[in-house]
Image 1 (cartoon, rainbow, N blue to C red):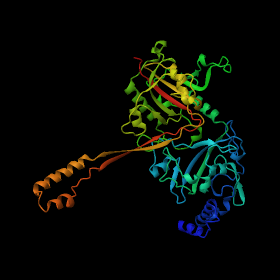
Image 2: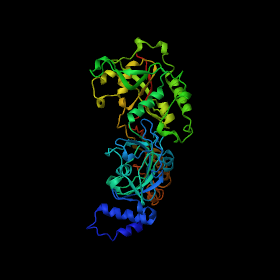
Image 3: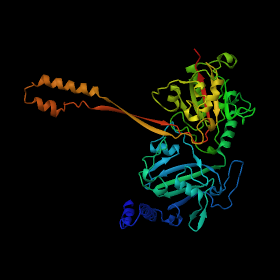
Image 4: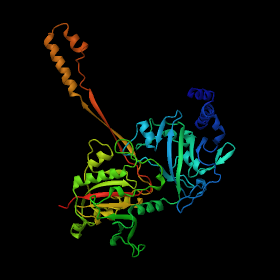
Length: 490
């Protein structure tokens, strides 16, 4: 079938047809052959085809505006809009090259315990500031569906047949972080992209702040972080409170009720829990996972100082240096990172993790810009309020963490090799045995020793070990929670 499309384009005079036009003709030939029902769904701007999988035809849509939520209003009619989307991309043969689904990643063999399989979030305003061009065009333009028109909105589920010019172009797909498929998408290849719009909001900062406030609750021991007097500006006035940054210096895993944790992500309602696959990652298992993490902390560090034992004498302060062990989570409980080996082994399924304590002094970051600091702003402001020899927690919005850019997930592979000495010794044993049986000057020596039994051992033979490490993606405007233990001050 693919050959048919190639044959169709063979009559094109390459001297007069651009690569863009050639690909348009090839994609049209493929659609005619495989999906002729979509020929009337061709979009002139971008040169792609659209298939409506789910979603109303913009008639009698429920407009359930609730403050920050656009409800089901068309995305293209909003000046500013942030969208939460599930996405899966395939090549023209149907092979998956990217996915945000844990189930599909497992089927592809790319599932990672370090990957947070949740919807993608990005800005979708009047200007394209980061979306794949084909995705942006479909969201910000009225789509031609036969004789009708369609506007994407919350609840839309569409399939786009994109030429490479509005997909991954000459570079191909470079997806990492556990979102890869069976194969990468080669350069200058069409992309079939499934998109499901789960939510559309006006202000992601407002959303994450409300999520964080719901998480900590107002009857808890959490305190609002404040700016030091030395950093006070005229704009601050008398209020040095840092909006969206909280700490709990009385936290202790002994009294922590892991079964009452209030994780929530409003845009994830009804979706599978990110912890899946394996014995411990079953849907609804988060409380028991939290309890296991608490048990590891207590076994490793003990109970630490009780709240009544924490005072000025063991306060870290801005000029103190703290050796910190930490567990970083999203609000839904997913462990993003930790420098505690036992927890890495438990949640990431790492066999021999190598971890080191993080030594940090807030004074080292004083007066420095965000990009020059050793730690994120949340640590700079909250570590001075913690105590040596005690546990604590920090809850922060992205403003004091990884901001509007977030962190991309990465996949790195390391290969190490070593000589196979066992094979070497085995070869030498046979060599010596046949030397004792056949005299060196025997006409059979050279034949048996070097040819028939292949005893001319290759000293270059090596054992190769490959290790793949995946870092967790942190999406834009994502609140975070740290659980920490600070070593006693010697």
